[in-house]
Amino acid sequence: MNVPQIRIQSTNAAISIETTPGQFDMQQPNATVDIQQPQAKMDIERTPSKLTIDQSEARADMDLKSIRRRIEDFANQGYQDWLEGMARVSGDGDELMMIENGGNALAEQADRNSASPIYDFNIGFIPSAGSVKIGYDPGSVRVNIEPQRVINNTRTNKPIVDFTPAKVNIGMQRYADLKIDWVAPGENLNKGM
Image 1 (spheres, rainbow, N blue to C red):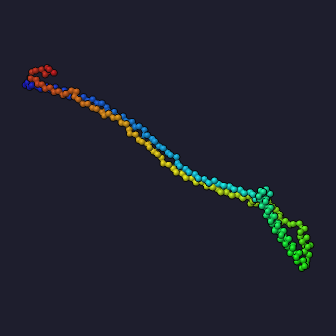
Image 2 (image 1 turned 135 degrees about the horizontal axis):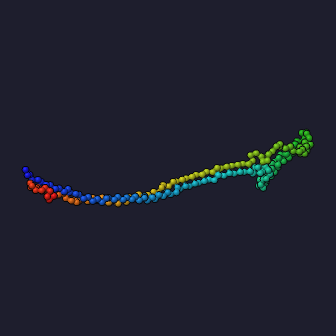
Image 3 (image 1 turned 45 degrees about the vertical axis):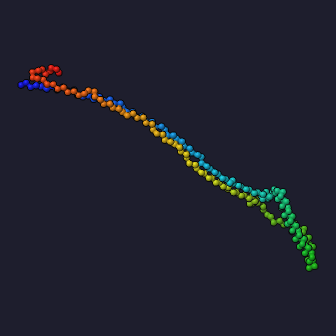
């Protein structure tokens, strides 16, 4: 039996894809730093210490007195001697006034006035202990510090971004094709293919 045959020839479609890659470029500039630190305010008040040494008594013990001190000492000694002399003369006069009461007042006064004086002195140290006077005032220090705040004018810088997006182009390189043919019975099937 001769049955006609169908001949089918197909060509697949082809898609063309072209891509351009994207680009990403980013730069981060450094921050702008502006920091200032003012100096602290400092105030110092000081009272100096004071050391006083008074050695005038020690020098006087060694007979190294100033003229003023010698004049004062001589004046005081003269006054004391004058008072003692007045008391002695007054006492002697009182004794002579009462000579009628008996006794030998003239002989006793002569004996008293001609005798050597007795001194009450045994051992001495030159200069005497405690004759140097020392005084010390330590003084004072007051410190007042006022710190200053930091002045910070630092600024951040935004990043610099350069972005190119990727591109994709899609197109048809070849369209699909379908050929359908039929062959009558007895014809050569390979003919025309």
